[in-house]
Image 1 (cartoon, one colour):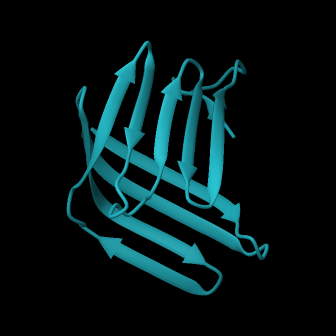
Image 2 (tube, one colour):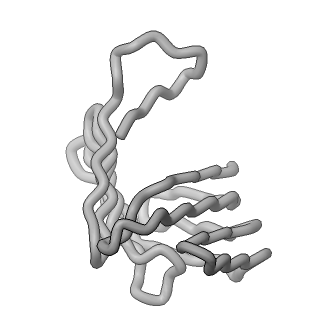
Length: 114
């Protein structure tokens, strides 16, 4: 399976930050393993590119329809991700992002909005 994630945000100083990740992944009932094919982080004029990184393993907890993926501090993206009903929450040391499924018509099968 593949994952493609792109996000644009602002840091505490109001500067734009852009991140793009393309990776392969495997999800089991106990582990999430991801291998980044490439990762690009742009913060102001600073551009960081990483290609073909080592696989990263995270623990998975599934309980009553709630899936939690807890990444270790050594992972590229340090966060806890929770999928529950129509929401997806990603918490890292400096922010909390919440996506909620929209009922608007879309041409794709998955329609999540921030």
